[in-house]
Image (cartoon, rainbow, N blue to C red; front, side, top):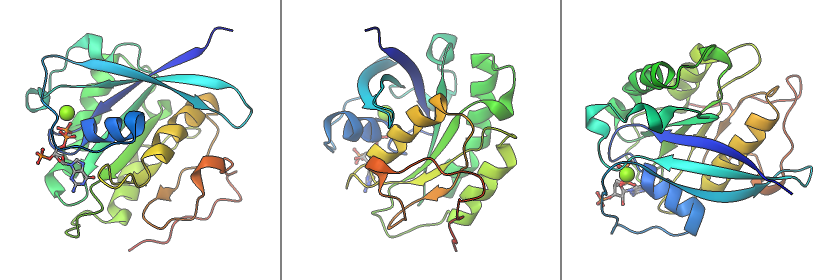
Length: 210
Ligand code: G3D
Ligand code: MG
């Protein structure tokens, strides 16, 4: 049976942990020894949905050219979802999400920006120097959410593996089941990720943060 393939692009400032998040998701491993390579590349991993269907997530990562903010049209083109990554300990990386989102929408040629599946990941929550609050992340998400596609905010640690599987699995569900609610998923959060059901609008409890 042919598998469905979803193209997922990881964007955000250099150093926020995009490559580490992908490696943690794909290999369940964290290492400081990654070398930046030239260009961009993707790795695919299968994710099982609750209805038993499998989808292949093709996760695209840049390789160090983030500071030029020009990753090339091929990187963005045909994306089914976009992950905006920032470092919760570095405010500028959060501020830059606005630019990254705009650049993505332009390059990918998205027709309806508010209905495109974006996911936010605030990474490095294992470091105890947070400067971006959950409330701020949620406000960004709310500002850019549409009527049917709302942006979920995850907080994660690629180093410790916290919330990484959850965030990527959620992307598959989000693209496949677009009518969903968003919430803030973070450290010690409510959801048991491998088996949570997508919430309905009325049932969702917003994460009471900050
Ligand atoms: P990028 O792909 O977005 O540029 P990387 O980011 O994945 O290359 O990570 C940049 C640096 O942050 C790396 O450290 C990496 O080890 C570290 N890092 C990534 N994720 C986490 C995390 O969740 N927690 C902590 N504590 N560190 C993380 P170096 O020292 O190699 O620059
Ligand atoms: Mg990288």
